Image 1: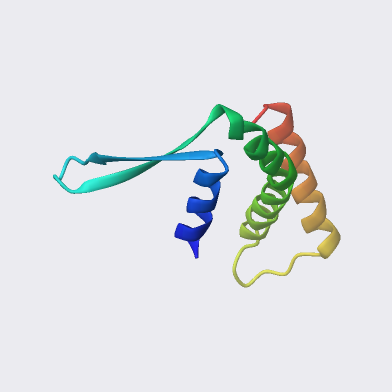
Image 2 (image 1 turned 45 degrees about the horizontal axis):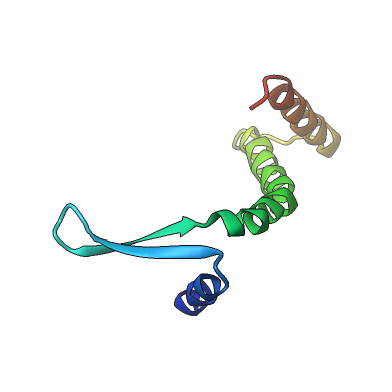
Length: 92
């Protein structure tokens, strides 16, 4: 599946694939984003990054629950919002 997608993006001049000898002597493929393809990656990052950040913050909030302990849902939500606010303030 992925080789076909990469080949398509190479055809569309979004990516460039170069093959070089690696440190182990085996050939390795390197994928580079071409300047003409940067707008696609910028769009994807802007569209998907908030979703990824939300899941990451939710996972961190869930990790704050200690084993064998009950937490009220509203408290857990407040902790998650507090964490997101603190990370935003320090520009993390």
